[in-house]
Image (cartoon, rainbow, N blue to C red; front, top):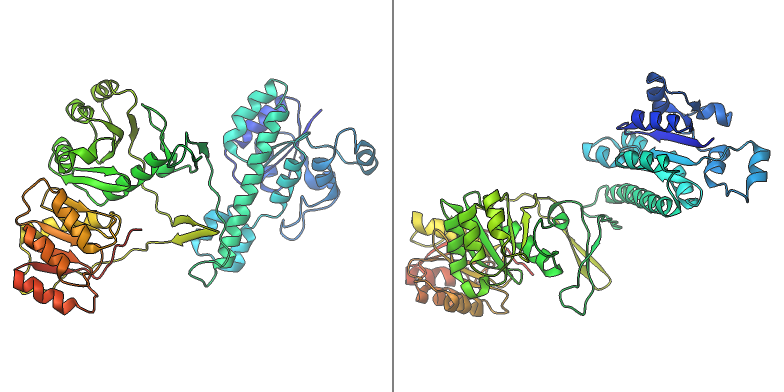
Length: 494
């Protein structure tokens, strides 16, 4: 008869699992809250303290830390049998453990003396012992695995390959648990911990990286990292980068909005009362760049919009929904990746550099728009500046954006010189720029950028301010009749 030791904080699925194990002929062993739950359900089990001959002590801090428990988990069949028999050690064939909820409790601002009581000691010790001995022991750390486990037991139990997979998951769980504790303790009283540990799950290999000679994978269980198309080819490394850029910018808008991204920069952004009109506007900003682009929409797609999308080459389209007729239309473009708009995930940003990572957080902040010129922008110019400023914050630096009330008109991105960015924005525009608004992601160190966009027709400009030559730039704006706003917030994007 096989033995299963059950010790769980999260009781989801516990009773069904225990009943299934009992019916399969397992002897159950348990203690503490798990034992009480089994007893309440009239499921027979053996108390850990009765088996070990040692009572639970120190308010339950010590209950499974015993040689008879760990010998039962670590014992090698056919190798340690004589020692086990001499010491009265029963081999444990199945361990089901989940841990005290340190991660969630750490978010509750508990006093440290209260929080440390949610640091599990016996649980990780048992998990590691069972996982090390996966040749003989199955270890389960996730209630989602209970139904699969019972199915496998009905087919003579998990085989060696399955036990190895469960062991890998178990070690990943204890690693993540220890990482959470380490990050918390290292971070007490500090903006950033001196030691930072992170774990990402759901890893999937990609066809290649940024280029075909590079290898790549994506990791993550939520947001864009978890996004998978329901139509079309698998996402590529560059697709994920562009989709991230598109969705992050899209979330700046509440009105119907379309964002088109190419090479991690917006090449067209537009708003309108109808999402189809917004998409057409965005595409027409730069039709050549929109060819082979990634598109993000914040409204659902119908057949008419699907026809517009399919009228050109789009690599990826993401929206909150697609009706049946839209899906039928899109199937004509069988390679186009179609996926639901991923949910927003608020998290710190990690970027790799040689030898380590950079970690960045964006806390809530407020901008104070201050008119710095003699003339304030009118309502139309203010709307244009608002749109341009939102797009500017998500465009590679140095960035200059020209826009009207509905769409971007010209985008100058990723330039070493701000004047070059302005010249590109003007040159790329396919629309009259008279009366447009301009946005600069950082302050203007000289009046030259202002003079470039004003000569092209811009009548208002928004920038963070903060240059030692602000007064000179403001004087130039007044001379040119350009209304200018300072926001006090810079939006470099490297």
